[in-house]
Every structure is written in structure tokens, then in C-alpha cells.
Image (tube, rainbow, N blue to C red; front, side, top):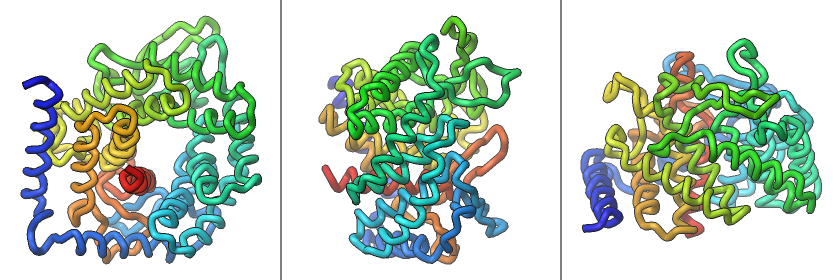
Length: 393
């Protein structure tokens, strides 16, 4: 049996075993019940009061406290994006009407050059809006956001600077998450006809490809560069267990980011890296049977470690796109397994909890003991995107 077929068999059995253990096939856990549960959660997004200073980010269930942020927060664009995606999934105009209101709150972030996350803030709101309404005002915001993001690019390093804080720790940090912000640049070049943004995105992807990955195709969280020479100073982490650990969401960012970059460039090197890191993830010996990873694959407390649904959802969404380019059934099987896992009462937030979130059990920042085993907005965003991508297949 060749390696590909062996992996397929393993994933198949794992999926079956997971379904049995979680009760997915039991009479009391039907697909209809799951759909009703999701429908209940979706409608709660409509009940959340519109407030530009109260964009929902996460929730501490024990204290019934919703963490609310302004547009400056890197997660601020996701709620509007969730509403746009729910409109696409349901056709219910109420989601579209609300999406328009929430999206407008992120417009000023297209001018904020204090953060590399302008991509998350602008593209996850206005980019999603463009998929529904081809409006010039939306295009203008995306292009302006790309221009703002491009100002953080250092041609000597060949990458966009991620953070401005902790200047006593690093000189020019570039994080794997930053791959996600390249979509804003690629799309802005398409919309404007200006190749500058695409060129910057390609240089950043190439620098990441060269320096961010280990021999086993896992990735470091942070690469610190010398901004004057472009040389790598150190390879480290902020959100992983330690510098040599394997932060689960970072691996998902990598697969998603390089798959997306392949979409715009058709550079085979990007596709190769996406496949290699995807294989590392889905065949990892520390991955639980249901496909929902622990927050870090090398956390020594495994199996008594927090899971991260957000990492699983980012990976599932990425794998649906990756399958479209490769037709590798392993990617499709794993994405389907993960989506089946989360569409259960084990991961869908209890309907008694009144909050604008869908999924539970994500981990935000374990080293800071922040947002551990909670509903987090971006897990919902990539879950809904994965549903749309699966539907499109």
C-alpha cells in the first residue's frame, strides 16, 4: 500500500471512530438536530446590539462576559465578515443589512498603519462585502488598506513588519500570521491594476518560505530580522509553548496563507509548502482523533491540554481550497472529518448562552492565559467560510 492510500485509510477509520465516539450517528444526535442548533446560534448574531465600540471578540462563559473591542483590534473585521457569510449561506437579508452596518465601522482602519493586521480588519469585512456587493466604495477601502499596509514593507528584509512593540526583544519581527494579510495586497492589485501590492505580497511570501519553516515542514511563529541587512537574527515565538514548539494555529495560518498565495500567483513552490505543512498537521502523532488540535502540538501536558477549534477551522477552510488545486482526497477527507466534529453539541455553543458566537473551545493566547477554551470570533469566521467552500465544491 502506498503512502497516500495508507493516509486515506487512516483518516477514514479515524473519521468513523470519531463519529461513533461523539454520537454523531446516534438517534439523539441527528443532522437535523445539529442544523437546528446552528440555526439557533446564527440568529443570535442578529440580536447583538450594533455598536462601533463593542465588536465581539470572545466570551468567558463562566462569568457570562463578552470581550468587546473597537475597530483597532486585529479581530474587529471578523463579525462583519460572519454576517456577510451567513447572508451567503442563508439568503436572509437581515444578515446583509446588519453586515453593512458593522462593515462601515472598519473603514477607518484602512488608514491605520500602526498594525500589519489591516488585512484582517479590512479584508475580512470589506473583502467579504465585495463578494456580495460589487460597490466602488468597498473597492476603494480595500485599495486604501493595501496602500497603508505596503508602508510597513522593508525591501531590504523583503517582508512586512508585523509588530511595533517589544523593541527590546526583537528588531524586525515577522510572524506567520502575516501571510493572511497578503490577500488584501493581491486583491488590491487586481482591483486597481497597480502591481506594487502584488509585488510586495510575493516578496513577503518568498521571505517567509525561505526562513519560517523547519525541516519537518512545521513553522516558527516569529522570525526576527536585522532591518539593515535583512539577515535573520533569531527564530522565536510569542504564542507557542516555546521557540521550538509547534503552535497549532500558526501551522494553519501557513497552510491557508500559501494556498491563497498560490491562488493569485500559481507559484508551485507555494503549493508545495502548503501541502507539506498540511501533511505535517493531519498526520501528527499528537493530533486527537476528531481532528481538533491541541493549541500546541508539543505542549507537554497533552492530552490534558486545551484544544483550539480556531486552528481546526482555518485548516479546514484552507484544505477545501487546497483540494481544489490538487484533487488530493486526503485533504478533502480531513476537512470533512473536522467539519463533522465541530457540527455537534460537543463544539457548538450551548443554545442557552446568549452571545453572538457559534463554536466553543478555541484558544487565543495560552502563554498569556488569555482566551483559553472559549468561543472566539475568528473560529466562527473560518467555520462559515469552510461551509461556503465545501458547498462550492
